[in-house]
Image (cartoon, rainbow, N blue to C red; front, side, top):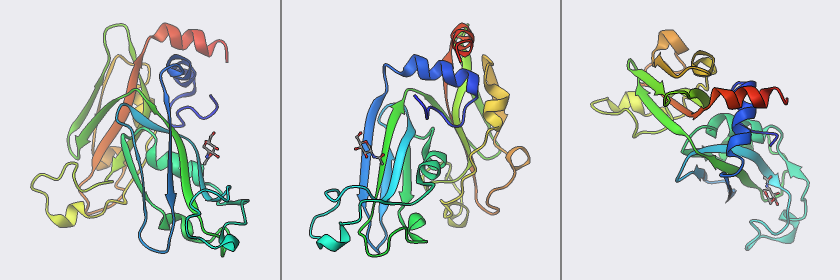
Length: 232
Ligand SMILES: *[C@@H]1O[C@H](CO)[C@@H](O)[C@H](O)[C@H]1NC(C)=O
């Protein structure tokens, strides 16, 4: 599995890919673009998103072809560079991820071609924790197991999380995200771990916005991690 958990440490990563290979489900979301406001929404009912591959452009003349003239469908070699990386950093480790296609439109990878955003992803079993700004996130595993962080983000991506009694001005910026390796570096390999959701820990990605720390992790047996890493 080449693109397992970008945000995790290499050792536990190998162990995790190995452990969960049997239980992941393959999902696909395709969103036809237009010049209006278009939303690409990924969701995992169980577990968290792990992006395998994403394409903005066109690689097939059949996808998103309804009512389109042939000349807008003919170029099937159109691919915006870096789309997989961008989707991964925005969505990995989250249960739901919403991306506006206008983030990919400029520069236009193929003028005159009708484009779409397609993401292939899997849902990985995970525990998710949210700590509102100035609170503590507690991560813990059963006795004998250790934490393996899939991804962590300090910022704000929606208008529903951590909003109680907050003025509108502090929750309206939902394009504030700062994926962070810090939680993984502190917590991976530990049985339990506490991280403060604070600007002085993560820096302030968007002043004036009330933020939260969102972490997705799983618990593994340290023996498994060792065994797998020795086969790297
Ligand atoms: C997603 O997977 C399908 C089936 O393997 C493939 O045809 C398609 O090109 C993939 N899409 C992307 C964006 O990689």
